[in-house]
Amino acid sequence: MARRIKTFIQKQISNYRLNNSLHGEWELFEYYYDSKNILQHVEKDQLKSEGNFWELSFLEPGILKMNVRLPVQSVNGLYANKWSRKRNYVAFADEELGKNAISFQYSIDKGILKLLKKDKSGKIEIFAFFERIDDKKRRQQNEASMNVVITYLFFGMTRFNITPTTAPRPIPAKEKFPH
Image (cartoon, rainbow, N blue to C red; front, side):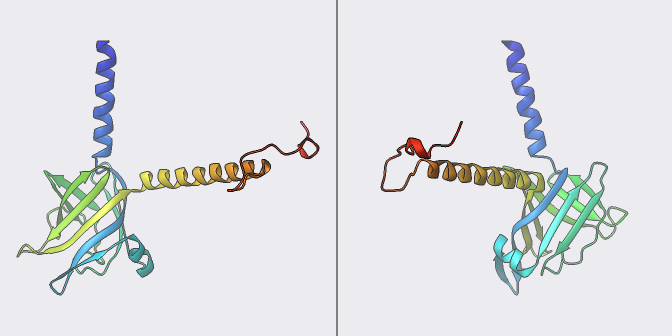
């Protein structure tokens, strides 16, 4: 009994660490930014239609791969290949951390990475929401498998002549498929 409880707790802790770790690939799906003292909100559909994106890959020894195209001055064209973390801040820099580094306040909640950048006066420059690319792929695979199941159910039901107005009834014996 004690062994089961111990393994259960260890699994929960490892799942928590995995879900709340920066390591891995992230993709922007929503963000807010300041445009002429007006906070603008951009969602997934608008991101895709405008061709904007921000992808982050946090690799183990502080190596960062980043690809960004956004209409936000502090982020657009940003090049960084190193990252470091201190408390609830993450810094992106080119080669030497500290020189020309840009810092973001971050949190990970329910598998969503949130990055917040404010200017010196405290105004929000950008508040971005990312999801793990692995989770996104898994969701897409689940949707694809669900489509297969729905297709199977549809074609399986047509075999039994199911329509919204009739109850299920078997196909007459002469129309049955051979065994």
